[in-house]
Length: 81
Figure 1: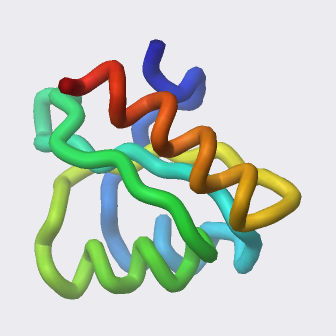
Figure 2: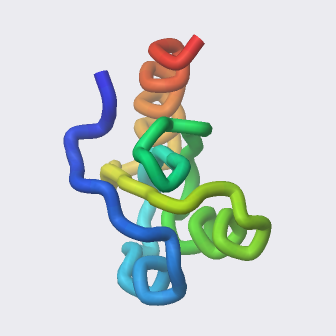
């Protein structure tokens, strides 16, 4: 099951609006096909993804801890395999 959030363009504005909190995220191509799932401090992770051109779109869910983010990302990653 994908993260139940709307897709956003992965651009500087989106990165700037991302929370400085732990969470899980999905990166997708321009058609919305998920390419990768990750976790960490969202703003930092998305800055890196933008810098390396890792995707065109992103959606995320905040968590309270990095451990929760890691578990959530692992659950979503299993779906892609």
